[in-house]
Image 1 (cartoon, one colour):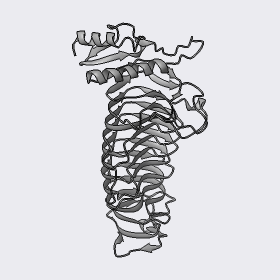
Image 2: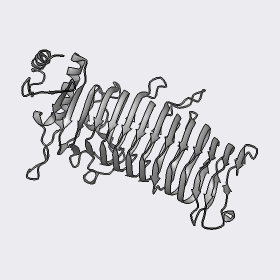
Image 3: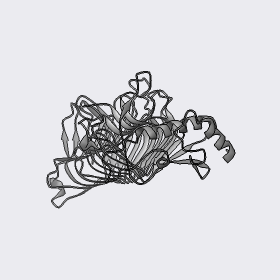
Length: 425
């Protein structure tokens, strides 16, 4: 679109968007993309001399609404630039006819990039006890595509809100091509970053990447992606989360073929610390978890879990694990779960825990791991649950300051244990 066409469109939209300063001040052209600086259109960063905190929500939402209208007309993407500074936001809500339930600050649409050095921070006292809230939201009935959020900071200001676990910084309902890059997400009473596709097996969110983000102080999960195909989570720092650090999910309920709706993923080169579980893949398939550093975990560093669909072909390799009760937990019947070439130390209870409660466990190979035995280790392996089948544990290197022969090899609490298909060498 040339300059004359762009100016004409701005003039034609003037009645709908009278808040625009002028047709020529609206956007800069950067790499053939129209860029909007939020300062030019009513947004104001916090200044210590302010007598009251400025609420930027209405102005920012008008910019987003305008980008939606223009994108629909011009079939191109728009970029919104958030410069350095703290931009406070209030919350709002829509009636039940909309697909954005609960309360939120900003509704995000397709074909938009939001980037910059600035911080979007929630004003104090913006939701009720246990409320479903998010700073960035989208329509669950009209899932978004072609969205990039990069470099900005989102601050949930949890110290000045009532308590809860459903108040997230980012929760987007998505269709395809979603990028979250170099974002800082902190201080929320919910999830730091949550991307969701459809629960329908043929409509997962396609092509998601979460790269280089810093996520901390979340009352629930740090980074979560559910119902996806082709996912990359890498080079992130996740810390101080009350629930899992990184969580991926693909269950669609009972189905005769055991299908999963979380497929084709890579989780690598992340640093996860001080969370309930480190990395938690649940009912997902065809992926690799590698070269992560996972420290100071309260339950299990890596926990692979099955609900209904069959988890399969998951490779867990070359991770560094320190300070956790359990290094690897596997719960459920699975296929081709490979745990190898990891380095584990300072584990308090067990290196491997297979099964729990009334569930079965099967389909795991654990080999060629370096396992440094701590002074209070209960056993190398714990078996639990109803039935244990088809588990091979071999060629792992145990390192201990004491006699290796004095290290307990297993604790077996399973109701049924198939000695012919389970080996521990």
